[in-house]
Length: 269
Image (cartoon, rainbow, N blue to C red):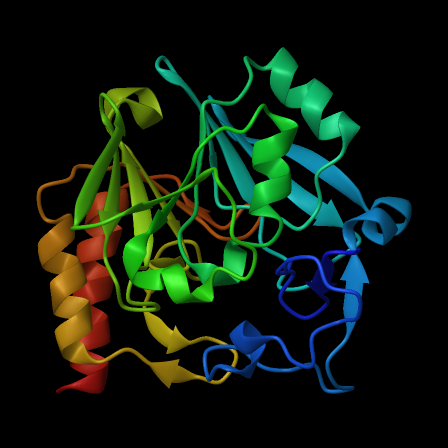
């Protein structure tokens, strides 16, 4: 039986003979059902119409995006650390080219995903690399539409993937919304992989926080203050956001602090 993929958000569901009636992730107020109604595809079909694009975003950081545009349009990031390669976030296509490219870059040790909008075909990615673990925060377990033995639901506010590589539960956008800090990234100055839990803006010199991006629902002040408090111990020069080239490449820590202050001033003067 096929495993249907939601065309609007890219989430893959468990095997069913017919498509589900609705994608719960899109029906939630953080997302939306496509204007023409719920639509579905499969990984097999996507492989005939779309391809993966690999872009060097920084030393040891490679963006992996789908072209032409599909679903939300985010990129995954292959982060090459001395302790093994991690796929940060995920996209709804994996194929033989991805397997060859990543194996040539040293293979894959783990997958970690910021929030449910980017779960996509995470189980397919895991299986393509021998069943590597997929780290998701337990607070978002209800949004997993395809259960899989490789999923590791971690809990608490931090989880060490490897020395100097830390998952941080910021919450905010989702209860389990997660960012990843790489202490050795950016030539030892620290790098933050934020998805859109801490979203890099179009100007690439500020970040923001939202409950819903497509529906323009802001995050409340208490949630933003909590994110700021959790991030206080971490040093980072660069911030890698959810979309291709949407990165802060200089002064990331100062950009974050300035953006928090601006956001709080705007919503709670």
